[in-house]
Amino acid sequence: MAVPALLLGVAKKRVVLRLAGAATSVVILCAVMGLCGSIALVAFGAQSTTTACSVPVTSSSTEASQLVSLNVPSASPIVLSASQVAVARSYIAVGRARSVPDSGIRIALMMGLQESGLQNLANATVPESLQFPHDGVGSDHDSLGSAQQRPADGWGTVGQLMQPAYDAAAFYGGPQGPNHGSPPGLLDIPGWQGMDPGEAVQAVQNSAFPEQYSQWRQEADAILEGFGATLVPTTCGPRQNAPGPTELPAGLSQLRREIITRAQEGIGGKYVWGGAAFKAWDCSGYVQWVYGQVGINLPRTEQWSAGKRIMEPQIGDLVVQNPDGPNHWGHIGIYAGNGLMYSALNPAVGTLLHPVGWNHGTAYFAVGP
Image 1 (cartoon, one colour):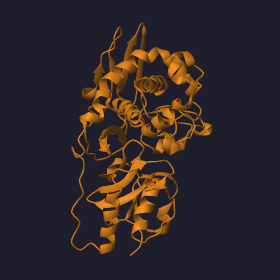
Image 2 (spheres, one colour):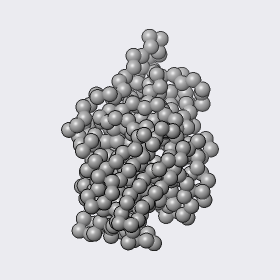
Image 3 (tube, rainbow, N blue to C red):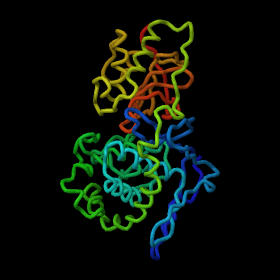
């Protein structure tokens, strides 16, 4: 059950914004892959988590003692909850991973502050959204998530828009964006860097209240200054607190050993939407490549259809997560044992070994002998 909490108090001239709602559990992951790129994501729900390069921030019934205060020049301090910190850092992390300049990250934070108060919002008019972890419930058309984008406008599926990392990737857009310029993200707007920041937000959001974005400039600057420094690549080490490969049991079959060996070869690969090339893949592209290397040909998508659902996974079995329909899931990886899995997680962290608990709705499928 969500625990009501003060999420954001910003005194601005004579206006005080207060937003309520909290997730049951929110944790921040800062993971490092490739050339030590430090990036962060948010894992929601009742999840066990390890982190690298940052201290986890957890939201619970004791959230009031975990509020973060940031100074704002010429205004009262911003007070953020753990869940808001997680959303903010997700936007900063994805921006860093996409080489978005700080001016663009500032614009994204201004948008998030206005649209949702940096909350991951479900929508009462979209019942499916209530099945996903969320910080509160809105009711504006079919707007969802931290950016309040609409599935009806082509921004993504309900499951995708309920993930702040996806919201950030979609808002930034550009060549690596999930929507490929339709609808356009910030990087798809010609001359965005020369625009007033509020106008740049509006060029993406097409809001009925375009004048509201500019009021968040100082707060966005404070958030970027407060959290951005912790996401600089030079602060990270490639093995700092990251889960390592577990020792394979002696009785494990040779086929399963080969699956894990191939899965490990993919670590560090970039996440490319729709990709299937070596180390330039999405989650199903990665799994297809790994299994293909050991002579098991899986379909490009819905790979669980080639297997049998099981309750107790063995090393090398398929892990499916983030259900987005009956017998359908939005993420897939390979079980590594001891509660860990290999997967191409998302555009921010790429391909890595991580806890199964970082995503929700997990099920397992066995393929082959």
